[in-house]
Length: 343
Ligand SMILES: [Zn+2]
Image (tube, rainbow, N blue to C red; front, side):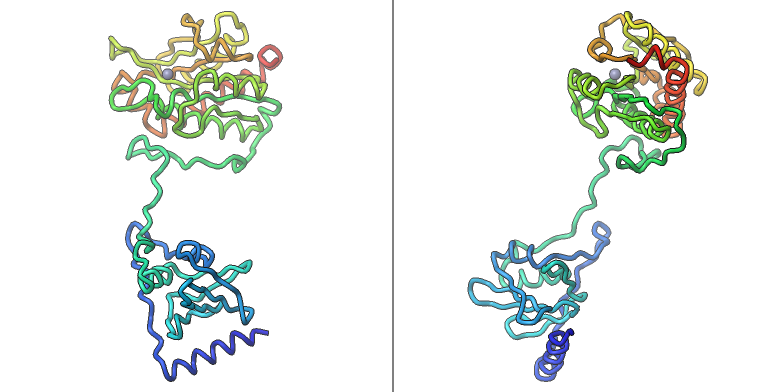
């Protein structure tokens, strides 16, 4: 079947007898770039402005330059031919769907060989983490939707919108070196995973460090016809850094909102032992409580202006405690007061 391969190999051996096979220098491996990399022949010709063809054999691939240069590869072989001279590359070429993959060092070699030093590929930097909080407590990698294991049906039928406050250009409050947006997001993502694992449908207003406008956040929740909405924040006291504790706001005209807020603040206080500042009627007309058409609350997880609480809020363990408590508050609300809170 693979007669061409044999022919090519025989040709290579024959040519090797009269010509030497030189070795392409391998890709330098750096700490930044620990993986050996490959490139497709279609990419190589696109970059070089060449063309490529399969044939004459089923496993041959020929690259041609406009000036008449020819580079011939064979799938399954580490030998290739540049205008009649044989070279050995780092690894075998590999074909798939009429395209051929070769080591990137081969591409770099060809770029230099044909005077296209501008196309030579350097080491690749590792992508930066999307967000960081505290070098001592790195955040968990965000799991793609659908990977959470469903462990119960406690929240079956519930659609909940989780709104991590601030984000992107808006850091929220900053106290003791901790930005509010960097507390809101991880706690919200943990809460999302917990709710999903209990069979709830979760809608997020953001899952990365971006800033959706307040109206857009409300619209996301309204469009998804959510039963519950919870906006996650942390507090700042501009005048008194001894102030600590948890408080949860609800729309003053919403009795179901009061029920939900009481369940959340109770669970948070029990889990953390933090000062319980209570469930409170929102005196400010907060947009996310006014413009959402469902039972809505805004949670203040603690005060960043207080050094000790700021330290706790930036720790992954404490964030997990908060998320778990919020989850318990959601479960209590959904199992006991479902009829009144859902529409
Ligand atoms: Zn806030």
